[in-house]
Image (cartoon, rainbow, N blue to C red; front, side, top):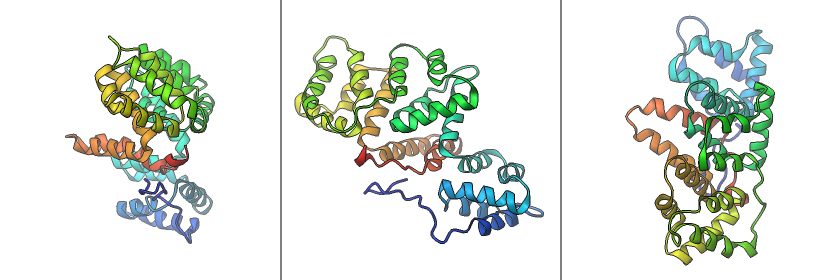
Length: 286
């Protein structure tokens, strides 16, 4: 997560010693019973890069795979959470996307959460590793499982071609185009929303949202809720929230997950995807 200044609060531990940490984990799993508290406290206090060092040290010292041992000692949602924490961020996101697409049905919420919140560089890394791990093209898999304007928005996000910085000469025209495509129009020109929200930088979009509010008298979220519906509305709102603040988007996701009846079941996927990537984006610099 990040604090108000945009700095990561999941930080690399100072004085970190991978060998010592691997011994703590080994003792937590040795003998009868498992010290789950020790495992949780240690792994959530280390950055993902440090967890990878611990995994390597564990194999060197004990000749065993740390993740395999964790799987054998833990169970249920807690096991899923711990294994996710031990997975490199991009690899975990690739796994989430593959699981969201394969088999019967599609988990659109996972597609939205990952593709709406990642930087262009991260999206390109995800596409490359997805191809390497599964010998499939991510865009083809996504388009094979989605349709309509929702599919078009996901395809735009997968191009990872957001413009850099703020285009001063486009701020007013972008705001006017969004106003004309929705509030001023009978019906909705979804294509304008897709093109602008999918291709402008977060910093540029924040300026557009300010201009849009002055022009229309509405926040852009209000207009999206009135003018669109279903999964298209969900992905557009996610893009807007991430443009305003990626940590804020995940904070809302966690809050929503904890409000549901099945708190652990709904919380774990969001928490895993939030924690394993350590919220390394700084929205002020996007």
